Image 1 (cartoon, rainbow, N blue to C red):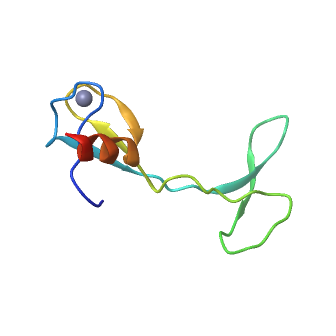
Image 2: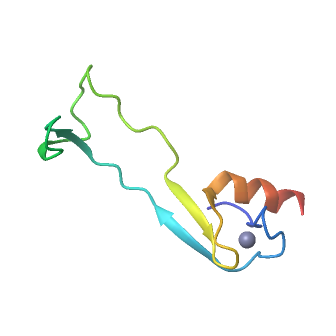
Image 3: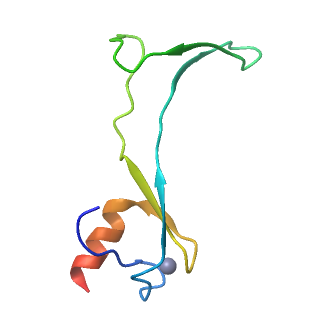
Length: 80
Ligand SMILES: [Zn+2]
């Protein structure tokens, strides 16, 4: 987190947020049952399995409930 947040939806909340830390887990599933048959290690290079490259955090406005990427809240915080 770097800099102030502001919610782009309700436009007033600058103080109450839920920080949602994303913890991706690479799994291999049985295509018929959906059962997880393997959990892949992060460091394991695998040409058949793309690694997660999305944001580390999502943020929820604790006033209106909006959930967005952290940068959306940061961007709006900058302009206010
Ligand atoms: Zn809000």
